[in-house]
Amino acid sequence: PSLSTPRAQPPPTMTPPPTPPSPSRGDGVRGGQAGTGNPMQPLLHRRCARRLGSPTSLIACLSSGLVFVFAASCLLRGVGRGGAKQIGVRLSATNRHQPAGQPLSLFPNRKVPSTFAYTPQFHQRRRHLRLPPQSAIRDSTTSIVADASSLLPPTSSSPYSRKDTQYPLWPALPLQPGSEPRITKQYEIVKGKVYGFEQKFGTLDVLVNIRMTVIVLSPSAGGGLLVYSPVAATKQCIEMIRDLEEKYGEVRHIVLPTTAVEHKVFFGPFSKNFKSSELWVAPGQWSFPLNLPLSTLGLWPRKAKVLPLDSSECDAEWLSDIDYNILKFSLGLAPFVEAAFYHKSTRSLLVTDSIIFTPSEPPEVVIDDPSALLFRAKDNARDPTPDTPEVRRKGWGKTVLFSQFLQPEKVSASLVKDYPALLRWDEGWERSWERVKDTLFVSPVVQILVFAQAPKTVMQWVDKVCEWPFDKIVPMHFKAPIPAGPREFRRAFEACIEGASPESVVDRSKGPAPTFQLPDLFSAKRYKIGLPWKELEGDFALLRNTEKSLRKTGVVRGPKGEYIKRL
Image 1 (cartoon, rainbow, N blue to C red):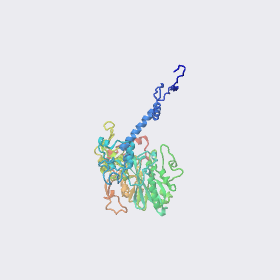
Image 2 (image 1 turned 60 degrees about the vertical axis):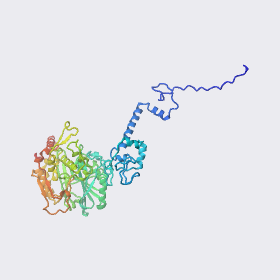
Image 3 (image 1 turned 45 degrees about the horizontal axis):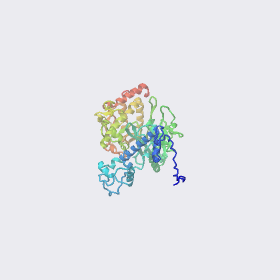
Image 4 (image 1 turned 90 degrees about the horizontal axis):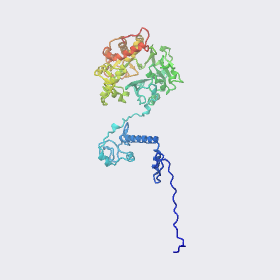
């Protein structure tokens, strides 16, 4: 070709501009150094890398991962109450893999002796968690045998839920059971006339029963119900009272018969549920550390009427059915007050803490959750305690000794020798329990710290109470009713205050037939009155030393000239 002929030139190529250094965002760049990002890098990877650039974010991600791992392990292991439900396993009468009544296995098609049933929810949960194949599980693990009764919490036929049995105001007196459920049990003390409502109450796993008594008033007394010494106003308890209201009429009177804090703390909250009722309190109410008016302790804007010391000066309409007598004396910083009520038609004597009867069997409200009894049954905290009736009775015996003597003689504590047990029961504690159980007596705590300061005043009150022809006693703790009359009541106080020898056995079988049905505890019609002081001298030791210290500091001091040192 000719040199003058122009030659065809290729089309110009477009050179992309140089990529500027990307900022420090984690795409191949670290510490602010320049680098080139990968345009094909997945978006999710870039976001994760960008978020992990901060140390705080890294710690948060690691914490979230640990929480997820812990939650997954709990789901797989079924930890805690109702653990079987957490992994989606439910009890049922039928199974899609096996016919009803056949043993069921934890995984599908596994023939192992188990009582679990399978539901579609479980298989969905299994796929969601990406569990290993069944063949791998079969090769790497042993057969899983689970008993539903050991993993699932015990079912109850009660129509009340856990929330219905909880008491939200428990911090006012932070004792057990606290925020845990406190079941209310209702008993018919005298058919159609007197009812008892019990809950558990205590501290340091020393749990006993506390009782509220409800009396059905006659038409001459205005009808309706009278509540003596209210308990915790749980939803379950209030609904039980509502059932009685539908049958006998509304709650018209609520009585606080003592100044003891374990009874007074429930008075205000309980009264708020019955706004049309009249409120009555024993005289001498006080509070600590500030002595506030009663209206500020849960009653405002309502006011309570104070029971006169002389019942003849009281204008209550229920006096046609009930008489009362008040024990009151100074006890140093505050007075001790207890009002005994006598229901005439049923010949029932109602008291709070002045006298008790300790049964050999634990109350039903304490058995409802026997964990405290099983713990107390241990001679050493390391000892295993199976849940059997014998172990429960053993725990109940130790519970009673703790509640009455604070520290029984056969209990020792050592932070070094017995750690972590701390408390150790020595041999021989059963002898103390044999002398205390199935006995009508004055509580040693009340006897030494209270009644020993004013024995003359106490016996004068006992003489007045014994003028009533009662044939049963209903205290606010332990067993009720107690088949006892004025003779047994006086004898218990004489053994406590006047030093009379305790009466070993009271035989009521020769007397007239009682007008009420005796509970199983008194089927033999025999029980003991009074505690043997000399035989229980070691158990009384802590209370006596405590009383000496309180008298020296002036915290406990009764009327002048009445104190008896030997008590």
